[in-house]
Image (cartoon, rainbow over all chains, first blue to last red; front, side, top):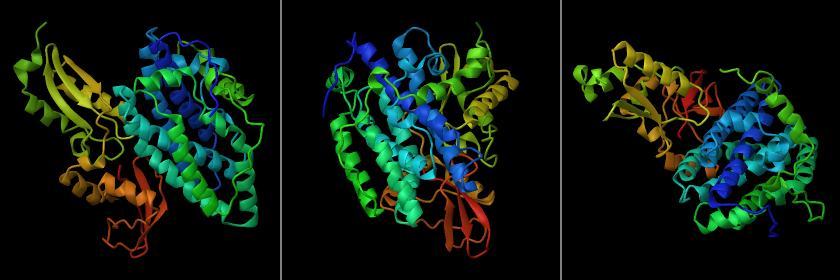
Length: 262
Length: 170
């Protein structure tokens, strides 16, 4: 796997802060995206399912962003980090900011990310950082439900009607551009891996590929052929154009009324 | 500062007081029955109440904290802190036998498998058949793995034709 040169990692503390943002921002943005389905899903059960999953993800991001603020030591709360940073400061995976599209697109994105989180958190539950380990062990149980939900739907869509099959295949093809971004490791990962804090993304990738390939094949779908158009850059805050729109909506209230409290 | 609580109540008595704090979403169960209440202990400046969230995004946690505060303050205990811990992660294995009985009586199927068994069943794609809380039949099916709250799934009983909720294994 190709390694990227990141801006210099100033200190282990800075690396840990960055690492927490990657996990927390990914959950936050995916949760925000999924919540767009609330009131719009094709059936009531799916409306409830997606709102539930969104709630889990936002709950997870709250824990890890709170911790990021503590690690940083500048007095920033979870809300300060979620609402008062701009797109370039966000570290979420490019995959999760992609638009919901149709139901197949939402489910495929959820499947690829849930399987990623499942294996990432399995590794992180062994982290030497106690907060990260506790967070990962806790979140893993919720993610197992997310995996089952999206896995079931991948099989139903792929092995369903000609139209559902086509839509699922289109979604896989479109989202595949953002797969490598999930597994890109840099100086932050390297530093924290040495300390037994971070997960080995190479290991996560092997597990991820095994499960994803299994389901895609079983769903009579095909893995896209390798191409050279893969997008990367979430580690440096180089996002696709979609993130700005999500933030504009998500952040408008606290930015308009910075003193507002719940 | 005078620690009023030390004059008034023992830790055991405070635990009994906290038995009145019910889950706002499942009011049949107390936070003790659910395993949310992890510890009540004396510290140098009062009492510390340790709780743990069921699901990370569960909105009931905030209400539970407010309810604990209310119960303690009503009893004249003001020197207390509520501490939320994540480890060890909450599991339905901690739900008391009494809690499971009350849950069923309330019309919600209690978690039957241990978390370990459940995770294995889920990942192997094995079909679940949860006992109906109304007629005890296992001739039931899962209609949605997600329900009205983060901790529940929806099922349908093909025997008594009742839809029912299940408290998910976690």
